[in-house]
Image (cartoon, rainbow, N blue to C red):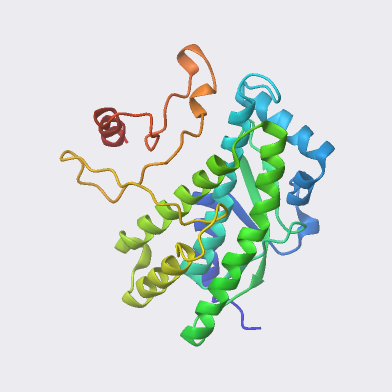
Length: 270
């Protein structure tokens, strides 16, 4: 196995930690994170995790805002999916999505931090056909990884599978839109071509079904918005149920419940 160039590996590790709260471990036995993804497939352990997550959000599993616990789990777990995609599209590296290798902890506010292992490094220089095959296989494995996890959380919280998948799809599509439209990310034409190739495969609508990243999303259009492409969610993630009084979360800037002017104000304030 060829090793990833040290400076690129260092940059990748920093990017994954900074933007996707994901750490790469050399050995999963060294992890201090208390939960493995496979714990979410065990009813007793899953309920303990989700109950704690709900409490951190001021919600109740099986009570007020229970569905929001599920939708917010999907939205936040999509951050790990984005780390897997970024490692591949930006750094030609495959991260493990095995249930035993992916670990996480709750951050005290209902969010999560993640850890996983390197599975394969330095795909750079391989035949483009082989790379596309690797990308397709990784996509299938991520989908197979997500299906039982989201289904289990949906059953436990009463959240809609369709809504949960749409929230993941939105973050994946917004990630690719950001990568492609920001030259400081892709840096070279060669890297841009790889990102675009991956995007076409991961967002392919052929043989479309509920478990996919290819949900059709509307782009925000407003004469006052001259920023990068901004995609709107198809469904509300229910984050506005978190908190109360002056501590309420409110609608996200991509929420379909926002009117155009309110969305513009939110975006311009960032």
